[in-house]
Length: 193
Picture 1 (cartoon, rainbow, N blue to C red):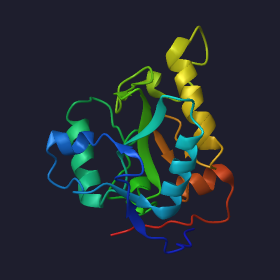
Picture 2 (picture 1 turned 180 degrees about the vertical axis):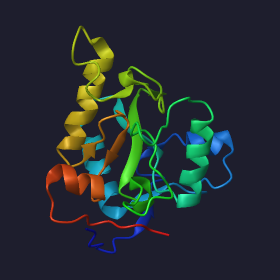
Picture 3 (picture 1 turned 60 degrees about the vertical axis):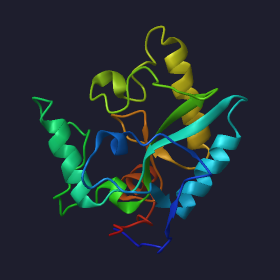
Picture 4 (picture 1 turned 90 degrees about the vertical axis):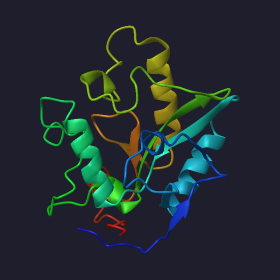
């Protein structure tokens, strides 16, 4: 269930570094100004402050309307033979069973930055493969990408955020997925239109 706390969407600019990939790709329905729920922004600011020197959080994407979610699904599905929704990579914008996480403003796609460089932690952002799973690098040598994923996870988990099983870059707080993972009685963020 959802018991929306009516927390507002707020802009990230000036508080967290942005790397708005979708804006650069020219999607029709991409938000002009990336925004997320105020409580998520507070969590990201605190998490970023706990990173080692020269590191920072870099947000790629936040709140999406369903029209943009549909546009993304069409774009990525055209490049893949398997259903991205059934594999857990892109939420179905037409679902009436659950609200797409980004539509709540509680989900954010992000990575780490180091000395101004935006880092891909073992895969590119939106690399829909098994290597993109947060735990994919835990077996075997792993190396620096594994260590960077662990660093990202350590600061976000400390803020009660959760990652989805398929994407190291997708973290959320307050949406239905978060509620299920944390055994919360209800999601605190519903859809923001």
